[in-house]
Length: 427
Image (cartoon, rainbow, N blue to C red):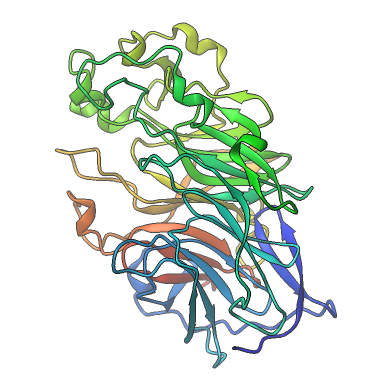
């Protein structure tokens, strides 16, 4: 066990953080950044250090007030899964202590009321955190079970609101609700039957064990897949992975260029009852409007029934593959970043024969609770090679963003399990 300062728990709108019982600010070492920023590119005035490596497929992460970090791991055969707890025992900013626990593939992770909550494809569990101990000692408690078992799009993020409820994405095991999925010219099922259990946000109670999807609240619908979700300003903010293969499934209407540029990755503001139109509609990045999907009779221009659905509040280029989003509340970065959102884009696979794209962390400015201005690519260079034609050739793929207690930013990598810590030095 690793001893750490005793603490109480508090959640903020950008993540889950903890403060000392005495209310005294904890001092954190600002390590010297790597000469090459750990291989990534950042805006002027920023630098980065790789503070952990070779963890496994690192996904979402959450930090504690004494500087420890809990990272969810997407496990597969022969690799780590569950959670890794990281601790800096030397005070040099690098995580030299690693404690692995649990044995499920995981994505979503949060701390709430003294518990660490972790989302796997089929359940949400929680571990009791003991002050002074890094690794939870008890068995996990099952908070929610009974999620669908289909393999496609089943990874789950989670986020807490300000009232002790949490929200989980249940992805749709489909591209556009075809009866024979991803087959050329097959129309979409109408109405789409999988929306009853998939393609939406479900709400649960944070303090209640033994819940199931059926006992939760079907909070929002019309979404494809979106582990990138977070609570902010009274709503669930979502960045969604949009549809694939417009050109190969519907070549009479869409070219390779259309497929590579038109299906935007939209950002949504979800409240109870929101419907965003998947699978009937797709938000077109070039036209900046919601159009009818070809599976439902669309020709690339027709709006039709799509006029009835809620529009995104922002949008990002096709196939960038958003996998995490977090709002920044710190003061370590310049004031222009405060209140804005960092989005981890895992990167595309569906742009061939054109080069793949995404593989970055993007910053979306906000003002007055709404996106304000054009997004900015904040961190790039993760693949290590350009042009990238095959995602498997990428050196790294960003998968999670989390704010450290001092306001620096952690970025996780799902290829080999690197963790970067980004600082602003102002030079």
